[in-house]
Image: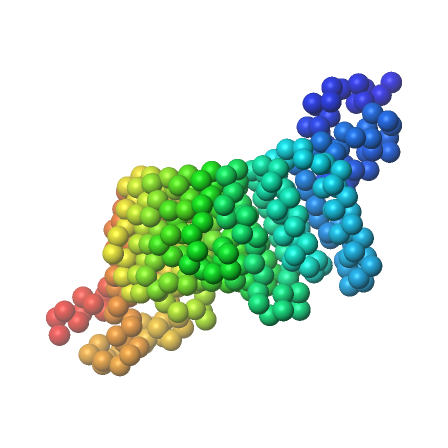
Length: 340
C-alpha cells in the first residue's frame, strides 16, 4: 500500500516544497495523481549546477545551457498564474541576463515574497553596460525577503538604470546583498524599506563618503563594507534605536558623529586600518609632532572612540585584535601629544 499517495494534496504540496524543482518535477511520472501536483508547488528552487553537471563542463556547451533555459521556461509556463511564495535561482553558467530578468518578472507578477538570486554574468552578456535587475523588482509590494549574490563585480542596484531613481519595497523585512560592487547608499536607500528588520551587506564598499544608517525598524545589521583597496569613509553614523544585533567590519572612518544603539544586545566590531597606518602606530620611535599626511590620517581615526561609546550598554561585545590595537594605540598617542 502506497501510504504517501494517500496523503491529502495539501500535505503533498508541502513535502514537494522542500525538494529542488528539478526533483519535484520528476515525481510527475509516478502516477496520474502525481502528474500535476508539483506544478502547484509555491516554492521554486532551481539550481543549474545540478542540472548541467559543471564537473563535466557541460555548462560551456550552448545546447546544454539552452536545455536548462527550456526547462525553467516550461516549469514557469506549466504553473500558469498560480501564486508563488519563494523563488530561489542559482544560475552560474552564463544564461543571458534578459532571460533571468524575464523569470524574475514572472514570479513578481505572481506575488513572490522571497527571492534568492545567485548569478554569474560576464561583460560579454551585458555589452559592457553591467547587469541591471528589472525595474519591477524595486517596486514590489509583496517581497518580504530579498537575497542577491554574484561572483562578479556588479553595479546592479540601479532602479530604472540610474542610481538616483527612487524605489519602494514597503513589505521588505530582510535584505541580503553579497557582491563585489559599490553599495548605492544614498539618503533614499534605507527609507525605501520602512519595514526592514535585517540588513546584511558583504563584499561591498560604500559609494558615499558620509554614510548614515537610519531606521527605527532595523533589528539586525551585518555589514562588511571595506577592504584594503577601498577608501576610508569620512563619517559613518548609526541612528538605529531598536537595533539588537550588530556585526560591523569596515575601514575605520574619520568620524562617527551619531551612534544611537541604546537597545543593542550583541555586537562584533572589526575596524580595519590599512597597512601603512598600522606600521606608523607600531613604530617605537614615532615622532608624535611630525605633520606628514600619514600621521594626520592616524590622528583622525581617534574618533573611533565615539563608536565604542555609542554601544556602551551592549551585553556581549566581540572586538577584533586590530580594533583593540587601533583604539588603544591611537588614544595613547593623542594622550601623549596633549602633554607636548
